[in-house]
Image 1: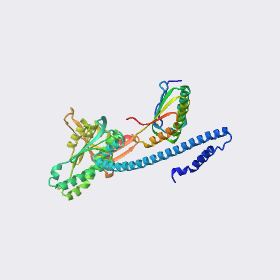
Image 2: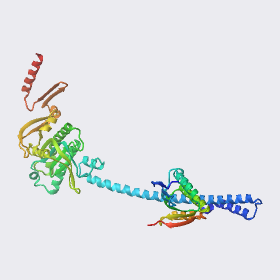
Image 3: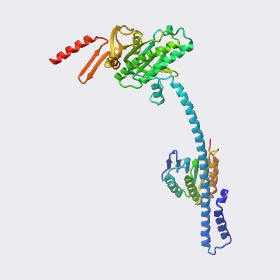
Image 4: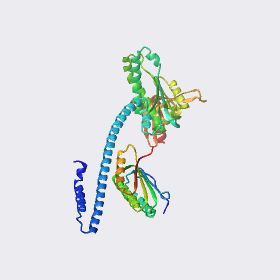
Length: 347
Length: 129
């Protein structure tokens, strides 16, 4: 049915009305004039109706075309988003998860900007890495190094570390940015992580020897707490989210002074973690750029672990705290000290 | 009577510039107001007042519409009626309908509106530029 057919009835009415006028059917001229005016208005209304219907149909047609275009655009956007997600997933492997999250949620801008914060920094290095892996083929070395870094990274992420960078076999991470649980808890998490890494290394020794490393990997770890400048450094085209400052250099120095498979902490870290970490003060070390020798502490273990092993007895209640470190004093000495306390209590 | 009526365009309503002193009126842009009556009432009122005093004077009215919905089309027809009535009373009315050269719909619609004007002079032209 064409659009003209839609209005066939109206067309017939107009034709009939025009015939009435032409045949002079109106005896009364006034009535005839009124009828003529009425017909004219009807014809105008008829034209308006047809015009509005056409306009409405055209607008609907345009709307449908736009909807179709929009649907195609949405499909294209979805496809591009999928590609972007895949690319972002690949890129994310080059960034610490916290940094990746901060950037992709918009919490952090990718621009040259920095701030000063108190962080706990961690450095680890494989002792004599080159010598240890010298006889390995490139593929075996790659597998060994990647396995080591993967294991250590998993532990770092489990404890909430921000992975700053890998420098060959060395790992640098920090706690306290972009997320922080407070300076004390950040320091504790860092030392707990360091202890967990050494524990995992011991488990992996056998596996690595099977892979061909004549000597198993051993680590030196340095941990230090202090103010650093944290942020994006570099150029507008290539930047790194990292930390700089004397505390960073000091951490690297502590790591180099640590014993093999040992953790050496700076004084501020020690002060923050001493409630749950057993440590022993070492001879202060001289570090370039620091006027005074640096006080440092060797980590002996976490009290929770040491209590389990029986090398520490620890009782703590409100107003009452006993810590017996049987690694540092023998049992007889501890008993004598406790008996002296009991005697004083009885007085 | 005031010299001008100026209504700025929005995303849904056209710009209205009635320069009564120079007898030049213009409506341009897109027209699909939420409430057509509310939008066009002051336009009708201002035009009625102006045309009521125009007598045998001259007036030019430009339509430069990109898109209009059905209700707005009815409002445009009412504006055309007012202009036609003034022309029948002796005013020299010139109505210009500008359309985008790639918009057949607005060209056809302008042509149809022009058919209703018997006394007012109608011009159907492409938008400049």
